[in-house]
Image 1 (cartoon, one colour):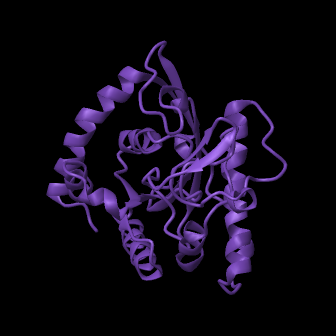
Image 2 (image 1 turned 120 degrees about the horizontal axis):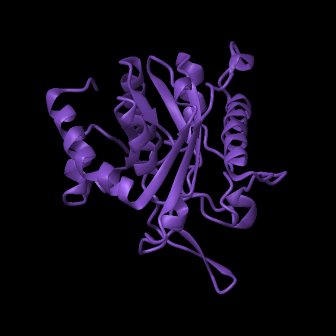
Length: 262
C-alpha cells in the first residue's frame, strides 16, 4: 500500500478539485495540528455529515499526510467515484467478517508504511439527535492494541451546517466555518498485555470515544450527554441511513460510506 507515482498524482488531481471547493464553501479553523504523529497513525473523527471525509481529508492533505479511508465496497463500483477511490488507494470494506479482517490488514499496511488511516468508530453517521458521538465499533481499538499504532482523536463542527445529516442539497450561504481540533494520541497503555476479548475491546473503544466526545464538547462549548447514544437501545439499525420523519424513525440502506470495519 505504498504511495505510488500514480496514487500521488491521483491525490494531487483530487485535491486540486476538492480543496478550492471546500475553501469556497467554508472558512476553516484547525487546532492541534502539532499533535499529529510523525509516523503512521489511525485518525478517529466524529461522524455527523456525509462531507466529513472531505473535511478530515482536507486537513490531513494540507499537512502532507495522504488520507486513506475505509469505504463501503459498493462505492468502488460507482462510476467515476470508484475510479478515484481505487486510484488514491482507499480501502474497501465488506460486511463479512473475512472482508472486515482483510480491510483492517490493508489499513495496517498503510500505517506501517507511515501513512494515515481514517476510521470512523461510529460506523455510520451518528444517530444521536443532537449529533453527539454515539456508541463505537471496535475496529480501531483492535488495530491499535494489536500493533501499538497511535490512535489520534479528532472532532469537527460546522460542516453539518453546509450539508445537514442526510440532506440532499448544500446550504452554502451565508458562508459557514468548519472547526477541527486534533487531540493527543489516546493513552491505551492500561490495556497492554490484556487478552483482546470483547470486554477489552469494548472498554478501549469507550476510551477512544470519550476522547472524541471531549474534543467535540470543547468545540461546541456544551456538555455531552451523560450516556452515549446506543442505536440498539433505540431500535435503530447500526448501519445505513436513519432519518426522523414526522416524529418517527425511518431507516434505509444507504450509509455514509466511510466507516469502522467491525
